[in-house]
Image 1 (cartoon, rainbow, N blue to C red):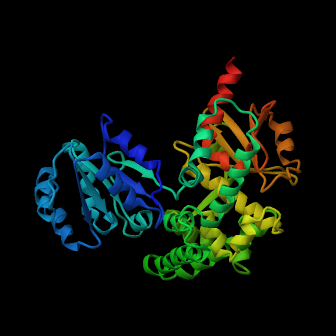
Image 2: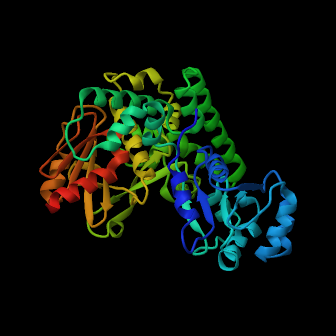
Image 3: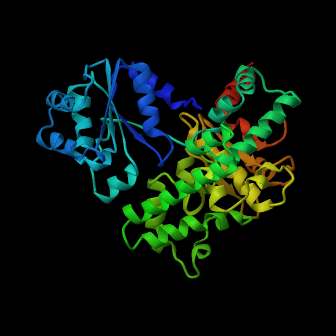
Length: 446
């Protein structure tokens, strides 16, 4: 089964953009970067050529001899059956972290030969750049972050009619019960597989849950190998410890990251580099607390208070050894971790929104906590997340009484509605947040 990835549309917009720069594609392992680049090349160009610096180490010598883009193209053409023609050929530089000279060449293609279309990507690119002290040609490349398959992409593949119905909405009002029930069902299935392409295809092709679990476990095993292969020896046990502490960290009622959960006596200074490694690898997301929702929100970040989530809810579920049957049962009793799974899935949708700002969270001097706070244009919006239909709790009310935001949001399994500044939306519809905000802006201008 083919999953339509929205990043292809970003590539298409880039293809014909004026002042185009080479793309540097970043993202966690196994999310489909190579597939996306090759699919775009085959569908949108007459020719597509790929240079894999891991499988073809002899390519490195080409870039070590010259920095002249025209000469590079001539020599690279010797390694391909298809021609390299400006405007007609997409050049893919895969596993570019294996050749720093190739990474640096993107600067010269930008400055001297912008007529060539180039997309570069690599496994653990952020990690490799830091470890080897490589220079990224900042300002000379267009950096695009890629994420696991979003629920929006999942829904298009699993239930196209429901997807098209949501796409067609022009106002915020109750969804028909049949649509809401389909969204709930597909969203729970998505939380089982997560957004890793191999696991999603296994689920949607009805290969059986054992194949889904096997696909996810293979990725977890690969990540474990990456820790040992790419991290500094002294950081390896710390990276392992942080990664395996995630289920315990998120099972707490207060999900703030606590070092002693990793190991008794653990200190922040001993584990900061390991956290950074996991972030650079795209495997975790760190969400910081804010002292208050001021503008810009980044100015109020508190770096010593944060929560850590997995890059993918399916991987988190498998890491926690949570059976799929528990996730698909709406009345299953796993209260704290159910809330964590709901937050992780919502965060995953936030991260994949094009142009979205990274989220934060807010806590009061008392016990109130709002799961996410985002800056959207000139608005600071608090966002509450509930796993099912129980929306009890006063945190959002405390925030509203304290700061009186124009908009506030709650994502749960309740129906879609808007009332006096509160958008209540089914959690599956986070991926359509830009649509809801556009509708709200238009309504409030009338």
